[in-house]
Image (cartoon, rainbow over all chains, first blue to last red; front, side, top):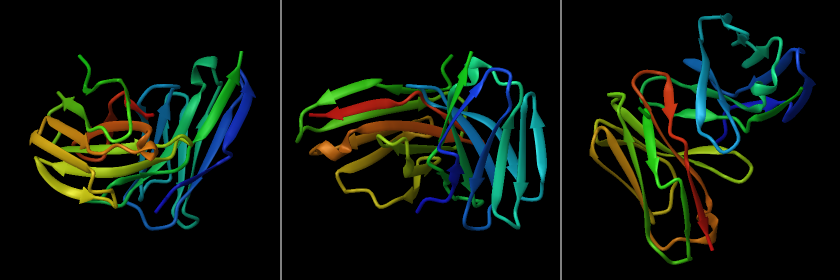
Length: 111
Length: 110
């Protein structure tokens, strides 16, 4: 069954603006990951946050995790046209488990 | 060097045919996976192998049979292809928690 649910499903912003994407999940997790998928390509790992962490940064990316609300958010600051892609959250329950993906968010950054 | 490579990239075939997709990873990872992405971009795991041993087998029709000759390779054979099998199939590998994906095989059954 599907674990992660992202919202919004689609987001269109102007270059330079910030993009915030949210993900909710249903069960306790070991970690939560965000991936990017450019059109016609495979998924690329962006950032991982463990269940005992609340916030992580990587370049223009900031991810938060609220285990009490079972939710995470991904913030992309100062967006660029090259950030146009689909973004997926994925949850990992721990050893020998599978990475379960949400439906994805389509981000369009207008130049 | 491509970390996780899949062949072919595109596959168009008729209903009822049997086809295979190959995957190889040069990362030295112990675990490999097959995921299916449907037309709505929903990704669903199909199989997972750890060091050539099957560890995850989701509810997938018996027509799908994975084979792992060694830990660097995980192939997917599909018998009696159906229209509903049309999708993009992704191979992935992982060592601990971070996954590396191949670029996908777009399968179209006509």
